[in-house]
Length: 116
Image 1 (cartoon, rainbow, N blue to C red):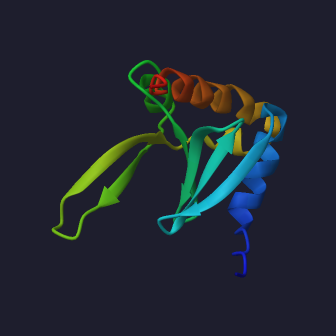
Image 2 (image 1 turned 120 degrees about the vertical axis):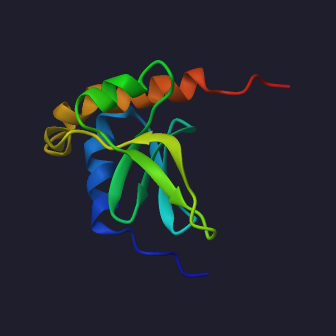
């Protein structure tokens, strides 16, 4: 089975996230999911990067003008998910991205389901 080529935005996001640890990316639902040490913490959909947030961290993303990830339903409804865009400057370097990516990882840790 042929592997899908990574889009430019996905390759660039991997560079931005490199200081975090062991990364992997997976094609999913027409977009891409990012894992760091097996924590799912980011997505790329329609060439836009979104980082995981939760009740504790969403206000931080919203305060800098972040937009939540929206899913458009076939019946015309839309739902938001707890993934948010980052400020433009975060896209400029791994150092600028690091606090945002760490916040996303922290949200992923808080959202983990307990082992059965």
